[in-house]
Image (cartoon, rainbow, N blue to C red):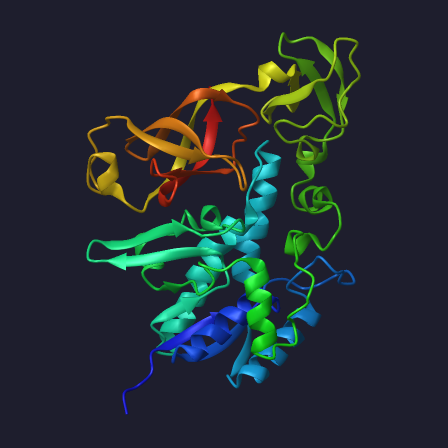
Length: 366
């Protein structure tokens, strides 16, 4: 008998990851379910949280229904260092982080993959709604075929990581996933979907940031784009680019956060039209398809390439020119864009808006 290909299925306790594991079992893989303990829970769980004790139990019950082994692994140290500490540092620096991207990069497809190696597993599988097409020239990351597309959250994965990732839900929508869950007899088929940041546990994220980076809670000035002091703020970690609420009143109409200056502990506000930027620079560049950028992974000729870009999760795709110079990505928008936030991921897509070509972390805007 031919030996089955072994897969480690990351099971969060939700319906998506459980169905992903179930579909792989049906496809003939040797599936081992793994739930990662990311942090120590300090508050009672609530309906929209994830990664709590109840989720561990739901993952265990789903694995039992599928007839596969299930293990809970302690990844707290890795998660704290790679996700929570980075989250606090970014807010303290006046940036807006994306902890789910960090978790995918460093935990799910980082530490978990090393565990997969120890068990002789060729692949790791998750319940993300995206697709991977491995061809002769390497992996191609494609958007999911329905509205719940999550390719953006995976755009910072390297080609090597993508080549060992399975995404069974890429051609399904949420309704179809729940239908599969019922068919497979999974106890989580009607479980409420989690949307909060897991380690925030329904509280205010600023509590975590101020605890880890007290300097982020220092009061400071709120100034206009012209430099006029118009009020005080209670800490830069409580603000993001494009924010409208919690700002000093103005007789000239709505004001928005246009810039956060951590060096001077200042919040800059302006009119909506003053939110617009014409481009950005980004670091932590990851090119999944480097050949699309006129070069190899080691060498680029610097010529701008026409792409579509997404500057935050669920944002629309916008046409732009992208160029890579060493470790820096420059993006020039065809039309000025609003509320582009340093710290967020900018994902680069082909002109069909179908394939992710690469991504980087936004450093600054202009």
